[in-house]
Length: 172
Image 1 (cartoon, rainbow, N blue to C red):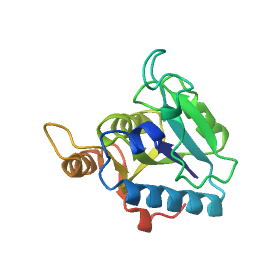
Image 2 (cartoon, one colour):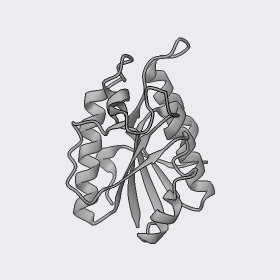
Image 3 (cartoon, one colour):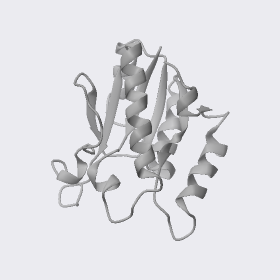
């Protein structure tokens, strides 16, 4: 059984100064994945990244709130994390096991940080990790475009760290 994990689709990243690549498409994809998960009875986890007190993303900051475009239905498990790896100091692994999940479907932001580290950690913790190829994004950096970052991570993570599947091809 798979659970859905949506990483950091929050106000400060979706609507921040560095516009994410394909953000509208990402929001549609995430909402579609949540619909699929609900229809299958799969648990949905949504992570919100917070930073230290005094930072723009300190706990309680409006920038850490989930993006209002997300179509929440109630019953989703929302949790805060303060490290790129969503498993670190959050109880996520225990909560996945408690709901009977042996695998986790990963989507969200940012590709090169939280998506990458969470995919790598999931397999190490014994979960079958699935990365939605068109379900994660980031912003351009001085070194690479967001499109190149996403393509690089899809190629790098597929196989040793996760299954790579397009959203339209995934079924819970």
